[in-house]
Length: 190
Image 1: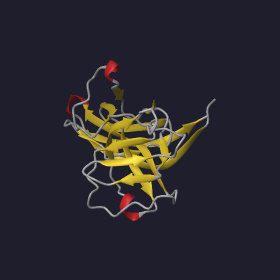
Image 2: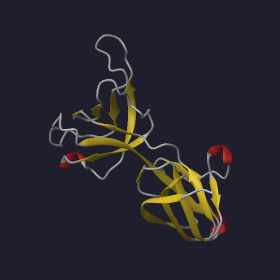
Image 3: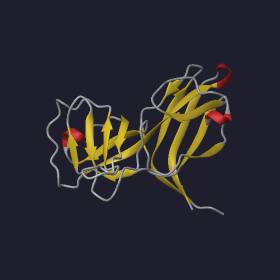
Image 4: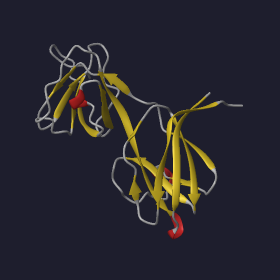
């Protein structure tokens, strides 16, 4: 018998016969609980695309039936302390020496920070991770984000009050022209 502990609050996503994407969701656990009221819904986890989820399990789609509780493994959450940010038309983020980046190109992330300009309530795509390993290399402790931060105030390094955290989006569409609400929350299963 497993024990399920809820993390955070329950979110709601309106679902119709038109493809829709959620806003970004901070990734905190490895499982999400889904309950749908309405006809069947097709769901994929992806970027903010509003594209119609493919009804193909090889594409990672899940069909959720009404009033059934589904548990979907969403992988381990990723986060890392930020030690420096270099502003520009793209944003360079540095992590502590000896750690490395848990993120790869194509991931979506958000800042959680006590420094107001970097507590953005936005998500950004990771463009690249610098994994150079020679003298002067970054050994995967530097990445580049698709965020024009040139107008943002300077980052104050050394405070250890900022982290980069993985996020995910849910793309949904009701099957057979139906509609309803998808209720979701992250849970810990033990």
